[in-house]
Image 1: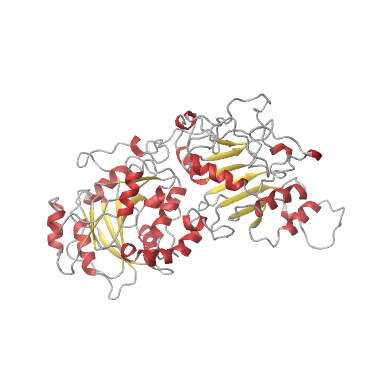
Image 2: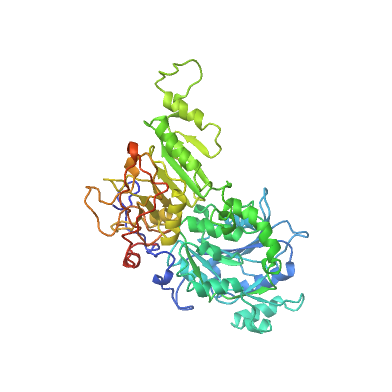
Length: 545
């Protein structure tokens, strides 16, 4: 099975090469100074006051090696008093625009700057930094290779004394390729970022967590990709860079740190000098909007603005009891951070006199009333468009109740194996059980229009997954024809193992014994792990993530 969206899939465009997970080593950028750029770039500089540092920033931008004809700079004035002005030393195509009404702070300013340009690429740059000569060029070469990369520049924090530097000196030093002449010492890297780069081989082995390291001071994406991702969250005053990186990840981004895009940060960022206070402020605001925030996931039993999982259950033609069995199991499970959408014929629930026990629309009416006051349940006439901010989508059928810890188990498998799709097998039909999809994986797959490939699915048929009365979702060893299968696990087509996920298969558990009355006691039964998945299955995965 291959991914087909609205017809036969086409070959990926030139600027959409296959990148497995975040291993961007398949991309080979040209050497600096030895290539001809064609893409235009808009450097968006959010600023609030700080005219002196802004003048130094613009002077460094005037000395860039990237083509001036392809470069513009937009300074977004976030309500400065007095208003910011353009200094004499600046790039040729530089302008100041006011932050649009309805918001303030950096995230809103990024959206304002993005809306003011038609450049191919957006490069976000803080107004208290000095860019080295090849800063733009080093980042821009990646965007000529793939249109779904999010590039982060390199910065070092240096001491700064007001009035010690002048724009003319900055212009001269950067143009000569000697920015070290402007400061004393090599500067200080962000230690947490340096450790992350070392641990993940410069993010090549970061998996689906790359968004944590998209820093706001210097980073770039294609403008179209920025818009497709939903832009920055204007409501966030702090933490908007991490959230923006998360949105890029949800849209299938590959995160690339570019050490040759050097820069000086004039002084330490506020999040370094007031780290605890900043973290305390960010926690509730970012947590409400970023389901994968570690602090949030530690708080069980909570609901948030953006849920961790969107569950979709098609109720058309199904009875009240089997739908309620599935949905109530989800709502009372260990993962409370879930939103359930029931797709059904809700227009049939009309007011006025109707038959009661013999009502032909009785099951629809019962379901409507049963969940009318449940805030985590939505009623929809058709399947909703996938919410790009939600990391996981669970698809389950009526009569497939999950055990209380099943969803947590499936999410754990997805995280452990980096899988894009986790499927719970059913007897005689491996494709009939619940499936957990990683939204970022599907986004990457759709972007690349994958075709002609086989994607590994992480299978689970262990007793952790399926409920006690629906025998058709009970785990059982065997393929679709009931023939015993060696070793568990398997390979399936479709959308698995792409951008948000990767290698890995889980074993299929042996069939549990039946309890009196025909039920299957799966809740308390220990999983059968007699057929562990060989490690080579994880190493031989073939796909883009």
